[in-house]
Length: 512
Image (cartoon, rainbow, N blue to C red):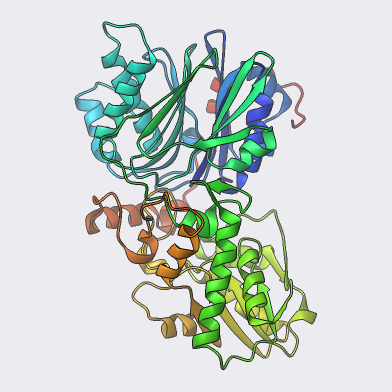
């Protein structure tokens, strides 16, 4: 899971890219990067850390130009080294920079093809660098006898679709030419287009979520469709084309459950409204199947589950209370490497308001249960705070399978629901009752807000991977790369990278 943004403007874009990445920070807290183009020169800076910590005044002054792209990263399979922070750059042809959200499921094969057939070298373990070189090779072969045009770019993207499998929402900048964005044929990861009219003509932004458009004052135009490429040249001319013959809109359902901000629109559907719907259907299940539960208070696990928890309390005619105070400087715990670090961070992240628990039967609502580490710790916190009984409900079904499309969910054996029934999970996390959302109900919660989605990628719930290329061998390899032992290895120093990408002086150390 990552956040991407690209802007073509009539004025410098560095501050807009920075501001856009700030509101996409929830999609990636591991690394951040920005690249711009100014009079034919690519300017770029990237490093590990939060957006506010990576960029300082000297970096922003260096990132001049009216066109640029940005990226925030969560590491998925592989390294979390600063060398693999995005965007990535390749100088041939023209000079291309690319940022990517998702995961290529055939990246290993493509790496071999790059070396043997295309004579291109991949310098990192990132599949995003592979995707960049696939695009660069396609453009290079298409322009040997022609001047670069939007039609040639769309033909090149068509070739990318033919070679690349998996999930990919992409923004790419072609030096001194324009901004390219495209989305995989299944539309697994989100990508939206915004427009703003200025005195000098239209300005465009492409981003992972509409919240980035809101903060920058752009109007949501529409989503990039599955298999579609859009190109905006330096003069603000907008071109688009469906570049894949077979497309099917099957976005990742986990975006609505957990990943996206509630104030975003994805595929023309309000994330906030879907989470309200999840709460209503969950409450109906509790009323029909768990009517014997004597619930005194409904408490959300902040923050994603709050809309669902509010609706549960409303339907059940129970009190809704805030029972936990969240430390907002702790990252998302299910992605943190190392079980001990995850346990420690849960206690640092949440602290109970004891008066809301003492001598009460408490229903805790969370958006989902992945490893069960957070749930187990929270339930124990509630008991320590004086709760009589602790019931636990998930607004999503049991997470039984890894996600291979850009969310760093753990191996199957680390998922608390893998090969377990609800009762076994309840015992594992220590709840007095455990209620899960039903998958078909979850789909209805989203589809009732829009009818343009054909289906969803629900692979983390049902093990059905929409790209039809995932087998046990692939899962075994990805799980090895995602193991705690691998993820806990120290990253390489990024000092050389900083010197390469930041030619500015070491003066003015203040943050932006």
